[in-house]
Amino acid sequence: MKHMGVIEWLIAIAIIAIIIGAMRQQAPAETNDNEINYIPMECTAYCTGTTRCDGGPARTGVCAGASRYYGKTAAIYENEGGKPGEFLGYYEVLDTGGDYRIRNGTCLDVYLPTERECILWGRKQVLVVMIDGKG
Image (tube, rainbow, N blue to C red; front, side, top):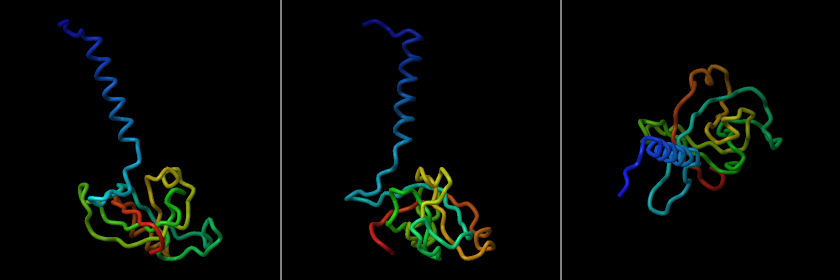
């Protein structure tokens, strides 16, 4: 059996890195028959604007998310090292937002009534469970 040279090893490592990178880019599974799959995201807050993308009113309990989540309810938990921490609430995904992170599904933007509440919310690393239907 012939031994691999340095170039062959580097090519093999590069291929493995590409495969792992592609796997990490895929959206996490949203459902599983045996366990709950949490989607890791960033969560921010907004208070400006009074109208959602569908023409309805912006209100507490609504968030902006990727269009593939539109019409679902997001159960949001603080991310405690990959495990769900404090439950932050249910938010209906009824807005889509303009930020690319929201559009690509890596961020949710919850509506809060005041700028002060938004500042206190800040940016959170969260785990999200998407539920079909309104909350």
